[in-house]
Image 1: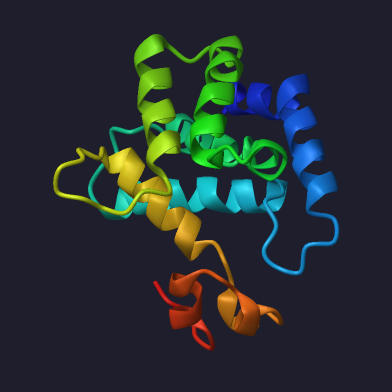
Image 2: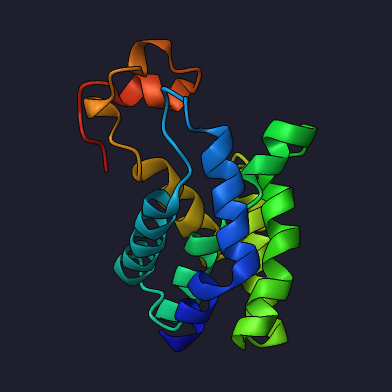
Length: 164
């Protein structure tokens, strides 16, 4: 997991997390902090293994999970879709961490698609599907004190129960 450790120690990565953290300091809903990113990374890898995709490495799964929301602050400050912003910011971090061009392409595509609804016209890789599902599963809606006001329809469906 040497390359994932390089992601975590990257100054830009840390700066993006700090920017999002500052903007979400008073947020009553789920936050997009390192704990969330790490949870999504772990769940992504588990989902890949459970669904028969062991050839997608743990580092690729973790790389996608650790980077999938790093552009969240741009959504708050500029109105830019955070999935697209995160995908753009991820490439130089992945490159510096030592990921190959094909690995970076796979991860960046998954990050850019992690919020999109499954559509028959759009090809989604197993990594894209796992990352999207992991992001949804990462939230403990049944414990949330703000779930009554949550604007995510899929969160309302999970209120009061743990769904997998």
